Length: 285
Ligand code: NAP
Image (cartoon, rainbow, N blue to C red; front, top):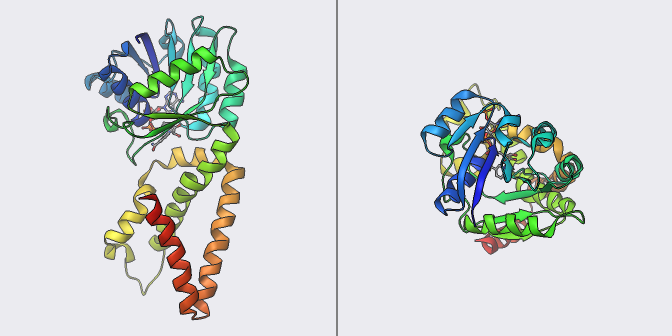
């Protein structure tokens, strides 16, 4: 399968890695990288992630058979609104955003007749950003979730599925709202908790000591994701606010229950709580 011209809007970790993986698989002929800052685009070009670069999205998507949008989630609908009038007939627009309901609803409605939008979310990433952080094997052995609706074109869905499979990803489909509720729990809540934990410890006052200077493996393992891009996570928290608030409430209740058992000096209750959590954690490894 060959895509003659693929446009990537946002050549960062996610967009750059897709470009690299599809090039390596021989699935694309040429890739145009579209972005805001010249420096990131020039780096993408120098690293061979893309063949051409432009800061003009309308110009960049002309003649593309497929457009992949990998900018922070709140910007995805406005990028799609900007490029929609310039899309070639038959063009498939898809994205890698971490939230799906609002994006799918707005972007589907923006498609001109004969063009198709398919929501996507590769379940892969690191805490690093930009074209230089991208690598071809990011998606290998990982899941990619596509979120078709009753409006989705079957052939377009089949093509996007095949492209993700060529990156080494396992593709599954899910209703957008279901996606957002699952990822509020499994991804958005852990990021919020990691940020809150580092914030709390970083501002803790223990007799004027810099507490963070004593951190070791456990703290660093647990808080790695708090090094992720704050603007990206601000957008995700805003866009999936409703589901995330429910997840935060569930977490608060769990923390309150553990606090109660600690305050009561209840060794059996604490051991039970820790054992249940350990069993869940061991089960996912
Ligand atoms: P990233 O490395 O920061 O890349 C985003 C790129 O988008 C940057 O190169 C930025 O370029 C460009 N950009 C930002 N706003 C733009 C705009 N309005 N128009 C054009 N270009 C714009 O971020 P990422 O990690 O690849 O994340 C991209 C998307 O993937 C997000 O929607 C995120 O939710 C999703 N995602 C991320 C992960 C993860 O673990 N990182 C995993 C799955 C999905 P400039 O520097 O020039 O602004």
